[in-house]
Figure 1 (cartoon, rainbow, N blue to C red):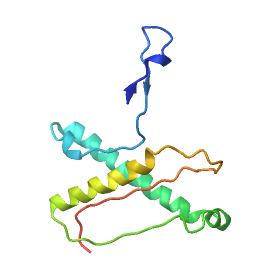
Figure 2: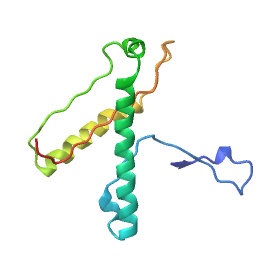
Figure 3: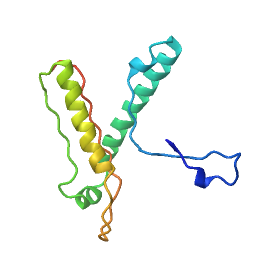
Figure 4: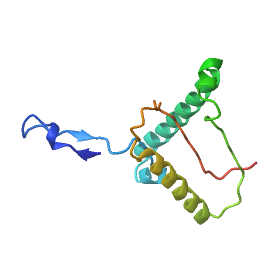
Length: 127
């Protein structure tokens, strides 16, 4: 968020604008107090539920809606063998790639662009 003083009607109002729609946090940011950690854990769970529900809704959409997107929608997964440092580097690269697409100047070419949700998790797990 950043302050947007030009939106205020007078000096008593403070307006803010969203800088990015990305949401990112680490649960370790909330380790200082059990109550804040519980809130962070609940937010993470709700976030995961939302991600899965968006993917399920796409797969449940009617065939004409899916055909309209052609080969665009994708799903991918891969098991990697990484150190914690390599996973952090990969995370930075993925975040940078998404930022490049998300923050780009939208071309004024007359083509309609729809919102597209993309999510990725890099987490230690067992195949």
